[in-house]
Length: 117
Image (tube, rainbow, N blue to C red):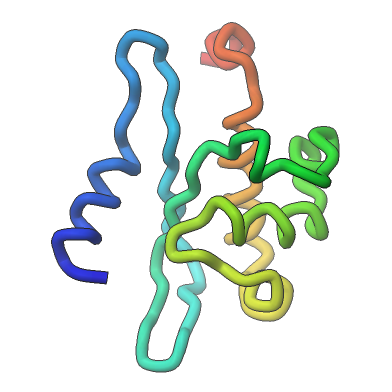
């Protein structure tokens, strides 16, 4: 990934549609960075899952942050793309919980989010 692509991805991570209040990306800073050879992954950008990314998964399991469900879903919606094995063997539980919370937050209706603010 080039420096420009990285800067573009970071800019997209905070992009919000001001008319609808919809956020399509969230960035999670990892407490325990992942090592991939010489590369270290310190943060992961998660995009709002669409129906295709959710295929074969239970929405209840996604909202409840079921670990097996997150292991299947996160590789479909993360940048850099995490693998199921990487999530199962190398992602710290606190980091997995943080990513799961962001994913679950994407599935909450706007009016329900406003009730908590």
